[in-house]
Length: 392
Image (cartoon, rainbow, N blue to C red; front, side):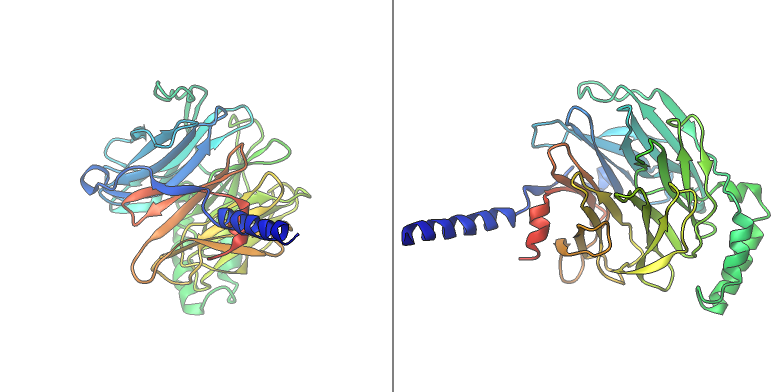
């Protein structure tokens, strides 16, 4: 009996050790090369129906430089090395930024991104949202063919009313800050061009249980977030009124088991926290934005509902830069509580690991990509057991 118990103990130790490991060692999608890639940032990742992975990012001399383009690479199902990178989008003499990839229920590949029409002098305020759709993207030996390429000019509802209410709400930021921000916002409201430009995305849309596609976005001009919604696969779009709350951008959304929605926001207000809103009517209306317990240094975040109903949130778990700590946390109760947390990257001193993207592949594994010191994109493969094991 003692040998049996000893064997069981050793087996338990071995299993625990295996589960504590990243299921696939982290790897760079391409070798850092400043001359070839320059400033590399803002990745996105998607799984094709055939099991291939496609990751993309933007690269160039700098965020706002005219040579910024969107590049991609493919990890063929069963391979261990990413392909040589290839071009996804490049507007001549303009900066193309923050791409996000998405496969819809029709198995079409989407690429959302925005072009900075006024860069480098007027970058983010002149962001112009665009997207492409492809049905010919799974053959690794052939370039991706885009069937549809469209711009998405934004026409937000009740923008004037929301800005007026926010400007009269002295609880949001200090009075001196609000005075300056409101003066700028009210001046911009006079321009129809300013209303339509400056809307940016960061994370992919979500397909709701109704089949509707919901694209989270935010205004770099007005500091508010809204949702773009298409019920017919991009043939028509509608836009919600801005969600009540100032100083947010790059929302990321998941759908609860009861059909309600939760949005988390990157924060650039003095709060220093990830912020949150909820919708109980399929994203048409949202509750006022509130702070969560999660710190945020004004960096990108991503949330994902898993196949078994658990929810993961990947984020920089610090209130201030540097972004040298990247964590993932998991909830088994629709985000009411977060029982498990583990660090993907954490160093003392300098280091920057940010703008994460995360998906779950058909085999149940979690694939995350993120910027690694702005020199390359790192890809890691995780599992839920690894998260539950916590930091070792």
